[in-house]
Length: 377
Image 1 (cartoon, rainbow, N blue to C red):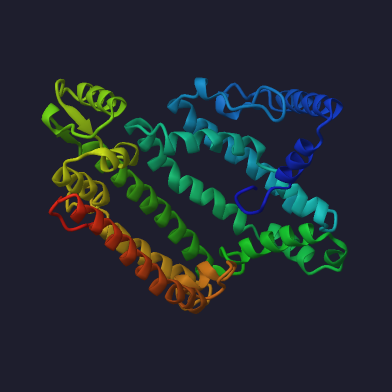
Image 2: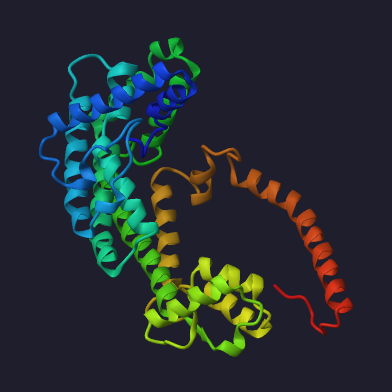
């Protein structure tokens, strides 16, 4: 349940790390090993690496060297099934709802799925591939439905609400009160208070948005892979040797041996803009990167953005908000769109003035060097 609330486990880890004695460290290592062994006994069916407890002390380390794309789908489905079993047990607990048997129990639930998400995040952000993107496209609506089953679990929400409105809340620590409020508010703001058709439509919108978010990300990745700027040895001015070697290797991988590939990623674009002495090429590389998803081709995101905005507006209208910004900012520091805009307008003039000063400084340097250019973005 870490998706909905701040983790009490994180606090426990912080306290453990604060204990500097050898005895505390040994106890922590022993506890971690015991916990891993206990989990393996509890779930012997975890033959999928992505579900297994992390080996090693202090909570262990994910087995990134053993993760495979083909394990993602079954691991997610198994993790979701286990998590839903835990949620059902909490929701149907015959005991009166308390902070411990409801809020804390939810915090402790979903450990297997949390481990899968560690790997899922690495695949999404660092090791994406066409095979993984197919898996993500299939699983995105399933993950949305899974979340909806939890947030729209009426028995569970009634227990959360009972704790939130109970006399017990006053006796809890500020941290415990905060996590209770976060849990209640997360459910209330995500459709738990809706009835009938509105609740069903809310779930449908979430599934549609999950698919659109996935397609948006897939399109950006496609443009990163498909748009590559190839340059020749005569265009390497200013580039460090380490970058040149990497660009040559990237070109060779793409069947362009003898050339140098500036890939459409920040890790390639940033150093090129920093060091290249070819101004026209810098502009080309910059525009290529910032036009990802906006090239009018099969990977264009403009229509997807419109659909996302339309569905977001409909979704928050079901909850009684005038617009998405109201819903998004309600539990943030700004609280309202008006406050956010007011802060923006206070900062904006000073920021623009500072930009003007810095551009003038750069222009003065360029003029002194006889560069005969006008500073641009």
